[in-house]
Image (cartoon, rainbow, N blue to C red):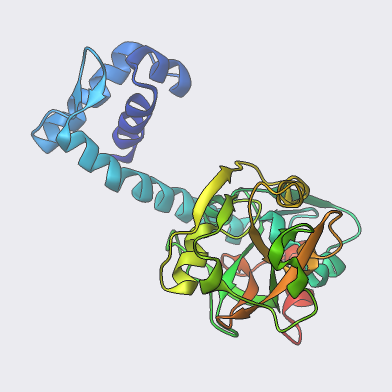
Length: 291
């Protein structure tokens, strides 16, 4: 399939409009219609209904394939350009909010850095397509185990930090007295009310996986990347959350109780494509030396 036709199709399906897709892509509406017609002729089936503009069953199936295919093409272009380009003087780092632990912060350059805090799932694609030079992703894992990352492109992942995790409770919570003790078992909290903040804290899906199941009911969903906002919600009693110790400690009105079981840690991994140069290479060296 012609990738130009495929990109046009994805844009039309996303915007549900031929005219809006034409404006977004810089084509005439007639050209967009011709692209869709050519793609449908190539595949021998209709991909879109016209009024309203909605993907057919075959069109929906094509969308499942189109997004990773186009991402791979963008990643291939970025990888070639990265190899051919002169070393950049600056550095763009994409990171999750909780990946910026003490070891990472100490390694960051004092100047020339652009830091982009992104949703966890966006970082591999940002690195693969060249939107970021390096990426930092994090999550829960057994000690020394790698994270499970989406296969968006050939990227190198290197573990750079691990630290214990704690459950953040309001100071008035009955279990807050466990602070300073052996800690809490995650399984005992499966039926508690939780904050679902996949991009500011550690996702509930990872807690369920670490616990081998359990409800982990959502009391409130927070769609943002501000860890301070998340800890304020926990301190106000709106739900529990699990955070790395460096982010959970010292929160006013809250108590961080260590998670004793299962034996899991907060792991941070550095992502990059090809062989980094310039400032990116310097940061890779600082973060990976001795790790």
